[in-house]
Image (cartoon, rainbow, N blue to C red; front, top):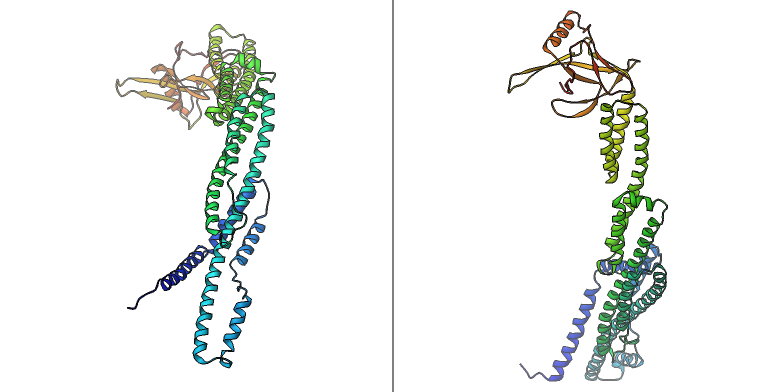
Length: 474
């Protein structure tokens, strides 16, 4: 192998580096669809952050046209020297000997290689210029956002002073500090024009500027979130104040203990918003609104309970019957105090149903229809003992079935039932059994009655004890 000169080695390496960089640039832009999608999404995000409405069709069209022109190869302009040399070379046969033509062709080839090198150098410079332009555009966007946020913070601070909401001012103070830091990051120099000679130094500046812009963007985003939190904080504070200034609030807060407790908790979360965030505030204010709404409903049901008490008092029940209502009153009042409106509503329904039943006179008859069970015999496995029941229904003066409040002796379940079992003696059971065997009916079916304005069942015929037992299942 002959001796390789340094100039040959350096010349070849320069060309290899140019080709390697060219391949890198081509590979970076091979996947055009993915590049277009990424650029389009970034543009939509930018317009959204600026509160600008831009149709998706415009974004797609603009991105597509940009890439279409960006990837079009434009033939470099040939300079006057190259044009002259090319002409001389083409006409070489007319004025120079063959060996001179070969020498001249070598010169031309060298000049061509130089132009290729220059082309790729210009391409790298153009790419660097594009990065610089993009960075400067982002810088202007961030500066605009920063200015808008500073203006918004000034306005909000004035409103917070009027509302005496010091926690919000603390949050905005932190946001202002972040914006000041962001402004420092936005002072990094970005070259306006990149040349072949300054490209290396400019790329370093651009890289540093991009890093600073990213830091500034994060700080601005954080400050923007803080401003949003303060707006929500002010809204929550206004809702809480409106709640307390309502005409019904003083009475509700005194009558129902949870109201005052929930509102006080909401105030504490507002005072701690600068350390614990806006989330607890929103939850606490929503909970306070809900509890006041429940208290309002409970207040209305308290009035309904009073009306029910007056209606029951008008029945003039005996002391024993009245005590049954008193027990229901106590349950409903306890649920109202706890703001268990659903439970209180169920209790009120029970009171009204019992009052309607008490006001109605009913007849008690053994079921005597053919094809229907009229009696039940119970046998207990453990003791082998037995009990007997006649199935009974209650009807009003018009013959309509009436539900009777019954407590099961077997399960303790309390329910309104139109048919229920009444315990009788074995003899009474046998008599009814034989009665039904004769013609499929219980002829001696009357077993008792209940007077109007009473809860007491009166059983007749000597078949039922003074304190009878009942069942609900058979």
